[in-house]
Amino acid sequence: MITHPLDLESRLRPPPRNFDALFLVNGALLVMFFLLFGSRFVLAPGLGLDFALPEMPGAMAGAATATVVISVPRSNMVLVESGLYNYEQLRGWLEERGRREPGLGLLVRADRNVPSGDLFILSEMAERAGFRVQLAAEPAGSGNRPGAN
Image 1 (cartoon, helix red, strand yellow):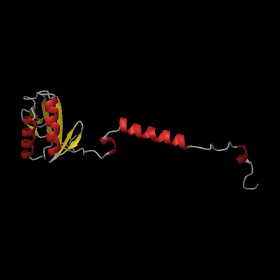
Image 2 (image 1 turned 30 degrees about the vertical axis):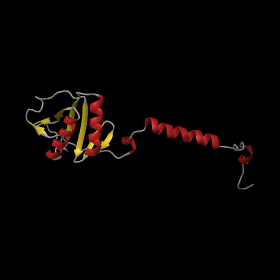
Image 3 (image 1 turned 45 degrees about the vertical axis):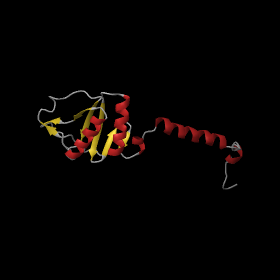
């Protein structure tokens, strides 16, 4: 009696006999939530914030609208709306998308550290798939440098 001075334990309801159904329903709801609303970008680490487009005089003069945008933060790594691909996977994605919707414009947002040879490879892949290719650049002196501001 000294350890239970108010005898609160006798006034509590008994615990339910079976939690199995509630446990399974909660587990199923969690799985459904992550399948329906999940994204590979939510739980996976993202790209760094030091992405910078190259600067070029007169970059805005040739600007045109593009229906598909891909980002190339480094060599053999391409970020599209459906995920992260290497060049071989991107080739299949471009061919499938080009068959489904011919005549699309493709904007390639490549980091300034991506080799120009990679840009030629990407342009050739996209043109063979039926895309009009345009490379993204910032006007000269725009201050688009990592750590600027």
